[in-house]
Amino acid sequence: TSAFPIFSQEEVTRHRSLEDGVWVTYKGGVYDITAFVAMHPGGDKILLAAGGALEPFWALYAVHNQEHVLEMLSEYKVGEL
Ligand code: HEM
Image 1 (tube, rainbow, N blue to C red):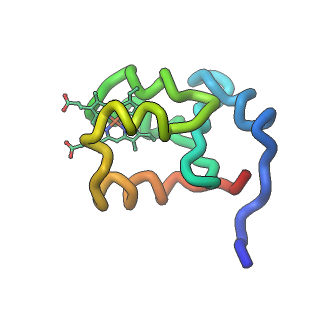
Image 2: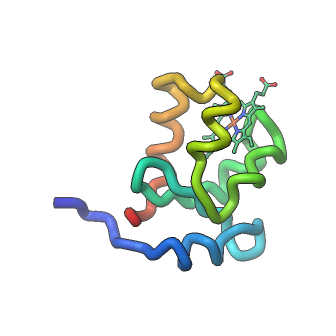
Image 3: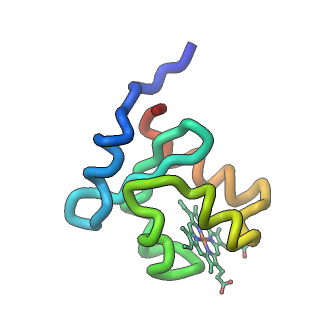
């Protein structure tokens, strides 16, 4: 059983700016990456995924397909879809 709260897609979609918070989803997990945006090696491009799924972007930018990137992402988990 998971200790994480369940969020709707609608709730995730409400978080797509630095003001409202930047949330993304990945494989059913919900991540609040607001604090990571300024640290992202790929710069502001990360905001293209704000409020939605990382998968289509990470399919294009295969640099994310590494264990250390997933470990980084896991630190920002706040819930599940
Ligand atoms: C590079 C993390 C979302 C575009 C990177 C790197 C990390 C990272 C760790 C460096 C990888 C390495 O060199 O080993 C993340 C995380 C994301 C995210 C944790 C989401 C929470 C995105 C999105 C896009 C993107 C949505 C595009 C729309 C890029 C690009 C680079 C990059 C273009 C290469 C930068 C360069 O080396 O010049 N990202 N990323 N990232 N990311 Fe992301």
